[in-house]
Each structure stands twice: as structure tokens, then as C-alpha cells.
Length: 244
Image 1: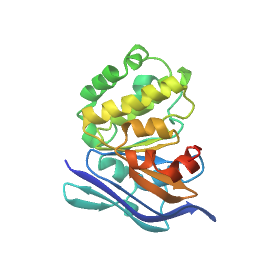
Image 2: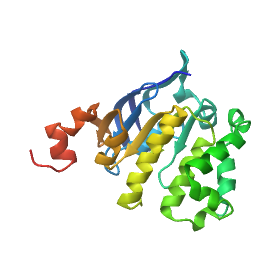
Image 3: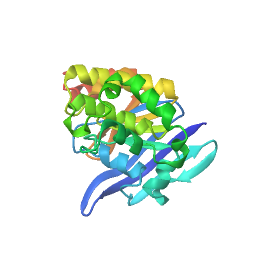
Image 4: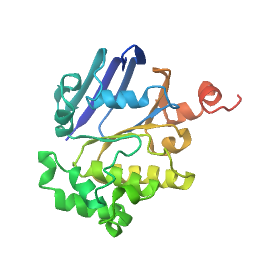
């Protein structure tokens, strides 16, 4: 199944507050694309636009699946999920009073994933053994790193083809950040996923990304492949704080 995502000239916000100004991003089949920037620059808003949770004021978001185009700006979130798009939200957004296993099963509610519940549950426990050990534990009583694992596994339970991961490093120690980013790469390769990841940690994101976009004040200011961004003098100066 070939997937492409075309985000073109998206402007969006919340009431009088404008969060995005003419943002364009493209993802090809099997790519990992990083949306890079500090807090408050519009990364999460763009993710919500793709998921239908925020309706843009202008622009287009088109998902191509095997040559058929779907205008995501005209679809409800449930319809977008049914196309095979899953979001790992910032802050995990788990059901804290439900168990690990119950949270995972809620991730498999879309019709296409229900027949794969057993296989996906087995894979989630294989990918994250600690979830198997704690399958009866309440999600809210787990550590931040364990909750992040659960949030990623819950998204995989929907058998997605396009995975959106919003700020996976937030609230985690440097070691857990590295482990989480590495796991996203492993899951992407095993599931043949296309991944759009919003992340503040430039160096960690660049370990697994094929391409990156840097967003500042709701606008894309730089984009390119890993080497282009890593060695760009303006990126090093303004984003990484390195004198050139």
C-alpha cells in the first residue's frame, strides 16, 4: 500500500491566535520526516490539522493511498483514523484509570484493526516487554517512559500506515529519549510505516529522519535532508545555538 501526504499552504489557529502561516510539508512512502522546533511554534497544531482535530483556515491536506486522493480537511477524525492514520499525542493522553491492556484494546477500535487484535497485541508486548509484565497495571501509575511506550503501542494497535508522533521526548530523561527515538525507527521499519514526527530534540530526531522541516512562529524557515540541516550555518546558529 503506497501512501503519500501532501500538506500545502496550511494556515490555522485558535480564534484570533494564528498558529500556522502557509505551512507546506510532503511525506513519501516509507519516509520518516521530522517537524522541528521549540514549544509554541505550531508543530502540534499541524498534527491536529492532519488528524482533523483542527480545521485549517486555508490550504490543503491530501493523503494519497494507492493512487486515490483523500482530502483530509473535509473528513472527521474518525474517518481519517479509518484510512490508517494514527496519532501518538503530546503528553501521551492515556486513560489513567484503565489498565495497560485496556488502553491497548481501545487503540484497536477501527474496523480494519479488530481482526488483527491478537497479532497486534502480541507484537506490542514483544516490542515493549514491560507492557506485558504490567498488562494489569493502571496506566496512570506507570512511569513517564512506560506511559510513552504504551502510547506508541496503543497507536500501533490500529494497524496504521501513517504514524504521527507528537513530541515523544517530552518529560523523559536523555537515556529514555534516545531509547524511544530508536524504538520509533525499529517499529517504522518492521511495520513499513510512514512517520511524521514533531520533536524539539534536533540531534535525536536527525538520527532517524530522512528529511526535516524547521518551523519558527508558525512558518517553515528551513527544510532539507539530514546533512543539509545538520551543516547549515543558519540552522546551527539560530536553532542549535552554535556560533558559525
